[in-house]
Length: 206
Image (cartoon, rainbow, N blue to C red; front, side, top):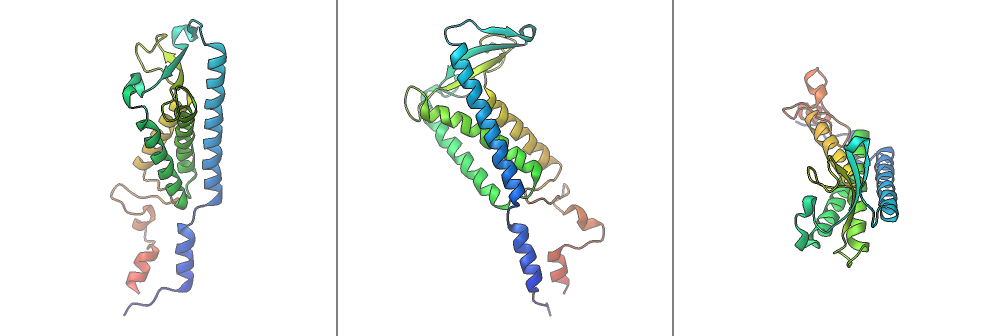
């Protein structure tokens, strides 16, 4: 006969499902810093690069060139600009949903970078010319060539998004969970094989 779960274990599981305030704060803070950095660099680019030749720095490794992009990388999807804000809003909603159980600091940084980058480019799509939800994104960083000959011209929001996604992939590969736990490659909790039973296993044995 199985014993009923104790009230204490139920409260512990409920607490485990709640987000950790510190992790949520780190997510929000990372997103805010990424968003403000992107907003500032775009303002500076518009103020200093408009109607100017590209600025060559680091021996030509990087060029600062003002580009207004209506599409994605290399202007892909330029005729469907309105689609990108909708995708971005979906990504933001997904991150908010993920934050409901967020207890991992590395995941907080990863999701914060993605959120900040998404908000940076979404602001361009909504508020910049030519019209709401058809706005062109301000890009200004080109590598190896002044006009994206070898790599798409990008901005800090793009960099934030890429870094956040790369960090998320690394966290997944190392088994780190958004709730603060960690699993092996076969999906088992890291401490499951060292003689310490999980709460679920203990209830099943009772």
